[in-house]
Length: 490
Image 1 (spheres, helix red, strand yellow):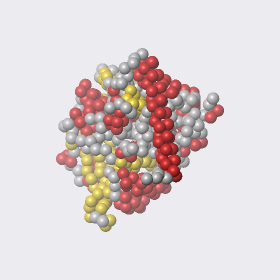
Image 2 (cartoon, helix red, strand yellow):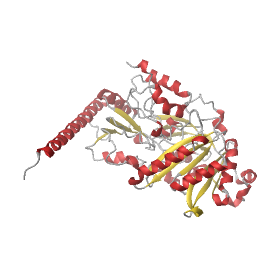
Image 3 (cartoon, helix red, strand yellow):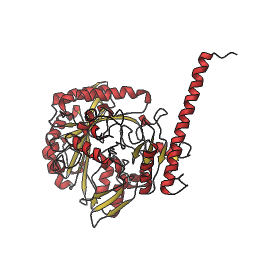
């Protein structure tokens, strides 16, 4: 049978191209391994460096991918995964990636919403810090040294093993990595602009022996809209020892939209006994008809499980490093500076019912947050914000990805008149590539301002100046990293 030469030429080109790519990939990883071995003075690096030929490569790569959007065959894979056992391994990895000419992605828990801690379009390696997760608790000095590869759950558990009277305020999800959480300023995962931070010194917070939890849901038919309005009026003025967030989602009910309704869940933890808390709740939310039986008293460590919807008597679950079930998801964020009217809320409910799967998490600000000036640390979203909104949508079928992402964007667009302006602020740890992205190492200040001013506001310029000083070659970069000033480049 004769083979058409028209079909044969592209076929030969395909094989030649893949052969070249494979050779290039192998040469990069081999050069990196050789450099790394010489730096740590060892020929046995198989337990530290995993290449695509290593039996554990795929297992380790996938172990911390929390968003299934980035767990498919089309997602770029690293040339190698470095799993350091000591700080010198991190140093060697940084030196050798720069020498070989590839990029670095640093991962501690894998919660980066856009996968930037383990994905790059340019050749790259991952420094996966899961072996660097020691936790040293010193109750007398009220501090802890925590390596970046530890999870928040592991940190909470370690503190509770030492004392029932200390805690640490951090994220709700226990599988979030300490490194990403702290370097980005809080709940999710970010950072990585200036280098690889391997450990953190944390100040522990005294907690009472008894804290109180409250969780209840109300639908719009049960007056949830008015309750949300009342919550907005006091969100930033609650006592510092109170934390009352709202989770809003579509749910089955008696609503007119195909039997669906909007459900608002009150998720409350107070560093106080029920006896002291109850009068405040009855005064501010009499519609809830609360009494002592509505609340649950517990220890601080149990409250960490409680807010994560985990059984409060199973603290060992905090040591699990991956979520029990992983899904595809897309998140966005906003800050609210003025109460949203009931009419606007009703429009929001309508938009959410059309999507069905969208969830909003409303986190109150004020309290200690408003006592720290916005310029003291990079995280600027403090005084003046009533609360933060996190938009969360998740699904289980990859074929629905574009549909769900469009849905999240449409609700985000609807909210434009009701959230912060000039800039419309966003939270770095809820990374969102819709805001813009670096095209390459030469992204200008003006281009990067598209997301930089939203994440950092007036601190952005100072951060660019620091970046220019400490990393003038812009080696530590990703799609939304802080750029360097053009005039400083060689």
